[in-house]
Amino acid sequence: MSTAREQPIFSTRAHVFQIDPATKRNWIPAGKHALTVSYFYDATRNVYRIISIGGAKAIINSTVTPNMTFTKTSQKFGQWADSRANTVYGLGFASEQHLTQFAEKFQEVKEAARLAREKSQDGGELTSPALGLASHQVPPSPLVSANGPGEEKLFRSQSADAPGPTERERLKKMLSEGSVGEVQWEAEFFALQDSNNKLAGALREANAAAAQWRQQLEAQRAEAERLRQRVAELEAQAASEVTLASEKEGPGQGQSLEQLEALVQTKDQEIQTLKSQTGGPREAPEAAEREETQQKVQDLETRNAELEHQLRATERSLEEARAERERARAEVGRAAQLLDVRLFELSELREGLARLAEAAP
Image (cartoon, rainbow, N blue to C red; front, side):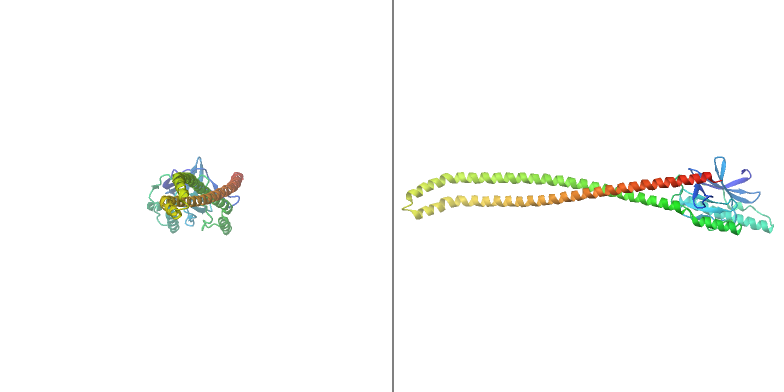
């Protein structure tokens, strides 16, 4: 194919696909990388063509006619049917902007082809319809996925080049069926990927919460141990104070008893008075101090019991978090196994499509 007499008026880059002629349902990629797709204008014949070269072979050689329609099937994918080539072409672009530019240029070329046909039929002097189509070269865009347009698959085309009724019906049926099977597999694959990401995020959150609870548990254990030591110190201090008080009271009481025994028969009332005067004033402060110490010990024991209860509750929460983490791990494992199975089935499906493409004439 020679384009010596043709001039490019627009160029862009896209992944090129053709409908599978054997199944009429699936897309066959022209290659793993994006190709240059250009509009050419033949001034001699007043013909517009869409051409894409892959290596030494013409992947697309489609003459634009007024009956053709370029259909956007997603934000980055479009298609048109060429009854002369007996196929449907699909283009996957890197961005919606590139798709819009290609579609607008398709409409301009289609209108120019219509005007050229009308003037040719009228037999008038035909001026170049390409005058309104400024030469435009779009810089190569980043490559989209080498696995094809993914979920940006097309399902229907709304027009063809209007050949015979049989050919038109066959093209409509081919376009209405679409690549449903492959799209369903890929949709399920992406759903599993999303589920796996959510489960992995939940597992990370559970691990973070478990680590935080573990730190809180260690801090509460340290606090409980410190309080136990403080209670033991207070108990020892209270015992020593009671012992010292007893030692202080001992000699005074002994002396008082000796005096009282000597005067018991004659001064019984005086002995009672002496007891209240000698023992009472010293015992009252010490009793108050002991009661205050006992109250502190009771408060500390109550606080310790509350901390132990809180510690047990935290341990239960930690155990629940561990159980939840194990359940999440098991769920992630099951999801990963299911994902592996789906990936294997998808790989087999693509290999089958590749074999069909190779076996096709």
